[in-house]
Length: 151
Image 1 (cartoon, helix red, strand yellow):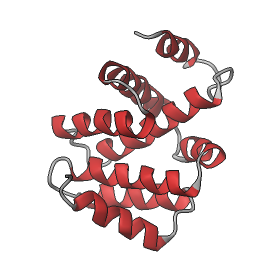
Image 2 (cartoon, rainbow, N blue to C red; image 1 turned 60 degrees about the vertical axis):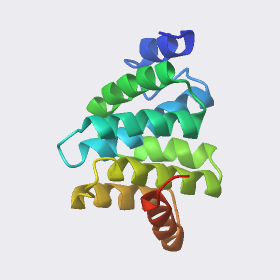
Image 3 (cartoon, rainbow, N blue to C red; image 1 turned 90 degrees about the vertical axis):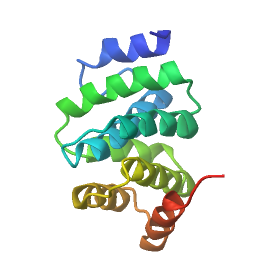
Image 4 (cartoon, helix red, strand yellow; image 1 turned 30 degrees about the vertical axis):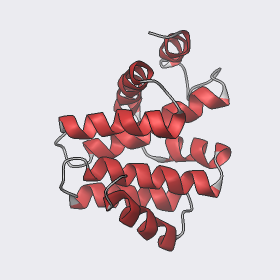
């Protein structure tokens, strides 16, 4: 486990990520939102987990091992969470509108990973996009981009 991940793990029991720097808080919030999507249909598929790690790698610039560690920490955080706001508020404080749209696209990629978009996955992504103040046209564009084959 990397030094940053150990530090995040040691703080998970304390308040709302008090003492973590903005970068660690943001990484944990992004990972938690991705976890919320894979758990929304109550059927966590291996392909979805792989896509979460890939999304963490591309969205946050993490390596594979760091992505796996962050995924495990995010799953713990989601287990303790009461709502999406604690995660989306961190993204709203830290990210630009373009970064938020890229995050919504990654959420859609996770939902597409098992080749089935469940109505609960769509609901959670729509709710997250609303909390991130992503315009509906950007929400739809992100959905369409995520469904297109990658080069």
